[in-house]
Length: 214
Image 1: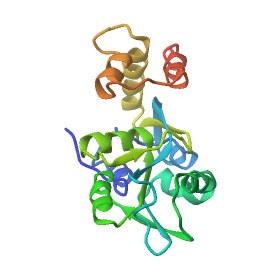
Image 2: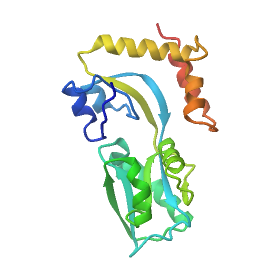
Image 3: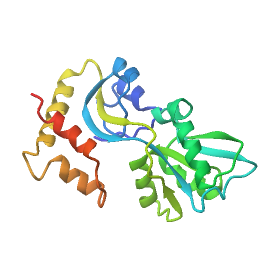
Image 4: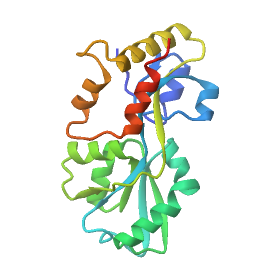
């Protein structure tokens, strides 16, 4: 049974047994490891940004409006590590502003509507999510940067007291990474869910390192 969640509710629902395993784009962090059990890594991404063509044309009153999903590591890292490099890249693209405001959203899929209404000038999220938004929301006027500003390792999460489910999840992932069944392995899933994309050697080595575990 699949249960809809949001970035704000996902860990509360896991803690109160409304869900048993968290299966989406959740970054492994030290704070989350203290409270929950992550599985083997499932993907590797990083924060990037999307903007509307032509670059900088939407900025009003010299205030850059940045959209971001609330309750995420990307939101936490904007001021800590993302902004210095992002600021330099935005200026080089032609963005002109004196300051910026954050516009926090409940779901990534709202970003296209916010671009259209002028409520945001750029949207920051993991790059693969931005690519999906652009494709699925038909955002032909939206441009996704090639830059990564953070490293975001994803995993599934279970409760600390559910070691049996954690073992099932880890064993299943390990077998996928071993590619013992050509119909159900990680390469098939990548090609199916990310058609046309070329994956970094770092990501592929991540799977190779984890498939040797016993």
